Image (tube, rainbow, N blue to C red):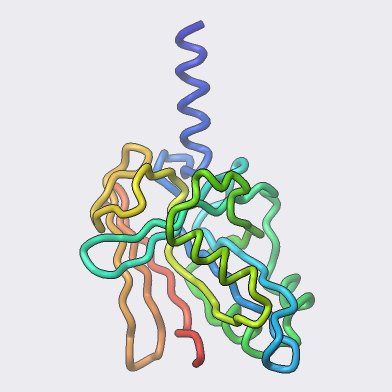
Length: 201
């Protein structure tokens, strides 16, 4: 019985992992859809990942102010059937800023519809601020950040950290020449890179 419970816990911990046990990484995008260029009519949230999910998964968003990362806990993907860029553009693509930003994202393989976890006890200060912004239809502020399919028990972590027992790093940099933001993950010695255009002012 103890062995069976142990293996069940490992399986739960690795829902956000590759088949090889490495944490799934990606980008969270919350892009307001505007009517007439001002009023927010929808605020869909997506997780762009490097790997297909095997079950409902929690993702922590990581913002990079320097040698430490601010954690936005947590986003949850409950429906593990991926959506597609064409599907989401058919819904919201009349907003040209939404369309251009979604099309700019590179390096992913799958797109999932996500939402902040309904368990508000888990929310970090960053997530609480994001929730306040999302509740205001006059605030068209977008949000994007790197995400890792793992849980962290602190609102701030070092840029070199451990997720699901795997040593990782995450770096964010802006390429002023191309006008793009580049997210670079290393996990277990393997590198994954994703990028997107910077949001238009």
